[in-house]
Each structure stands twice: as structure tokens, then as C-alpha cells.
Image 1 (cartoon, rainbow, N blue to C red):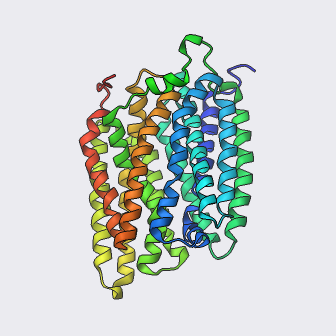
Image 2: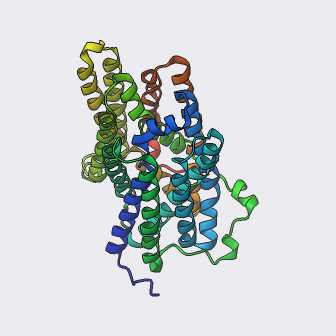
Length: 402
């Protein structure tokens, strides 16, 4: 088929739809984590540790997916990754054995990151061909999918069985996403035919480069989103004793403001450089979220709804402030490297994944030993404040050291 069979405008819409469905799918079970925890009959520390094992699969997915795309192209890798992702997600909600959950959690983590590397590689391929940067807007559509699924899943709590919900969704999304990939076939990133540019298994490791300023900055800014995704619903429900439906609203608000920030950040750029906006937003997110959570958790039980209101304000500020920080560091990683985009996406993700894995364990066992999710939430608060030390890496004239 001709490479011009799909115009840039249609390709952009299909990529945005792919990101939307990706977010919709992998975040569908987050509002129902309390039910998943009950299925496994685990306490918070053990549950958090088990959930973090997806990072093991993610590590291998990030390490090898970019190199496979470089060798065989993005089409087959994306289709395979989508199947792995949704087969494992559909299986996770049926499992009551911690050991089996561990196996499928690792597989799920691999599937998520393999899809992530695949579709982001196509986004950078689109950027190279069209000179249009949709990295941040694609992340916004991902967040939009996460928001819609949070609302939808919150509505289904206590109305539709967890297993029916997630299994049906997994089947439908796998079919639709594969159909979109097939429709993008004429413009998908193809295999590199230059034998001199292929990477051996040895070179996967010897070519590995860590851009520390960008990697550490990324880890600092994205963990708040991970923490809210992992613990936000449980935190609100356990701390305030509100209903399952109300406990999902802070997470929904957080995600909604992330979408708003990601889709509208381009309007701020004419007024000041990106790195300055990132610094300001990080301070807003860290201070706003941290202060609201601290005050809310120290109010007496008789002021339950005041505490809930502060939760809402804190999650609102946290989502807005952190919205475009991750995509900004992500785009900087590819700009500062001489390696192919697919490989950079994977290598950058490996470092970030290892750092996040460590933090997830620290947070989970902080909760287990102290019994306080509020205290553990101060960890991502401090991290996002620390990100201001790495914003200089976002300047256009900054360069990687290797």
C-alpha cells in the first residue's frame, strides 16, 4: 500500500484514539482495587508489594521491545503486545492465588510497557515525518481514557461483577485496538533494513545509556500519578469511610485536571520557556497536594466532609500541577539521545521503571509498618518537589553527555 494512503490528520486522530483506549483499558480496574485486594485476602503492604511486581515484566518489556521494533517494525510487536496485555488483565481479576497473581501481574506489566513503547515509537515516527509534536497531547488522550474508565468503573462498583466487567472490556478493547493498528498499516514504523544498524543481544546492554538528569527528573514527577492510581481510592475509602463510589471521585478529579493541563500546556509556552513552567508546576503540585493531605488527615472525625473536600482540592492541584511534567521529560529523553527513538523509549523506560519499582516497595511497606497511607503519600510529594533540581535538562540547548 502507498505510504500516503493515510494523511497526517487521520493518523493523528487514530493515534490519539489508540492512546485513549490504552488508558481506558489498563486503568479500568484501578477504581476496583479494593475488590481485587479482597479477592486475594491480603493486607495493604502485601497487596502493594504484589501489585508492584508488574515492574518486573515492565523491565524486560522496556529493555527489549524497542530493539525488536527496530528489527521487525512496529505492527507485529504492537498486535502481540495488545494480546498479552488484555489476556493478562482479564485473568488477573479471576485469580485468588497470590502466586498466580504474581505470574499474571508480571505478564501484565510486560504487556503495558510493550504497548507503551510500540505506540510511543509510532508517535515519534509521526513527529519525524510531519514535524508535528503530539507527545503531550497523546499523553492527554491517555489520561482522558483513564478518566472515562474511572467514572465508568466507579459507576459499576456494586452494580456489575468485577470479573464480568474487566473480562468483557478486555475482549472488546483488544479487538478494537488491533483493528486501529491494522488501519494504520501504511504509515507504521517499518523494520530497519540496514544490517549495520541492527543491535545484537550483547549490544542491547553495551549500548545502554542512562541520561541521569532526565531519568531522575522523570521518576520524581511521575510517581505522584502512580501513587494516586495505586492508593488513591483505597486511601479515601479507608481514611474517611466514604462509599465506594465517592472514594473514586478524588482520583477522577486528579485525572481530569491532568487532561486539562496536558491538552492546554501549549498555550503557556509563548509566555515562558518550558523548563520554567515545569518548575512552577512541580512546586504547585507538591506544595498544594501535600498541604491539603496533611491538613485533611489531621482534622477530627466530626469534620469528615471538610476532610473530603480538602482531599478533592489536593487531588485537583496535584493533577493539574503534574499534568505535563512527565511528557516533558519524556520528549527531552529522545531529543538528547542519538539512538533510534524506539530504543530510546525502551531504555529510558527501563531506568524509570527500576526507580519507580523501588519507590513502590518503599511506599507499600511504609503503609504496612505505620498503618498510614497519608504518611506514605508524602513520599511522592517530596519527590515532585525535588524534580525542580532537574528542570534544566529540559532546555533545548541542553545535551546528553553521551
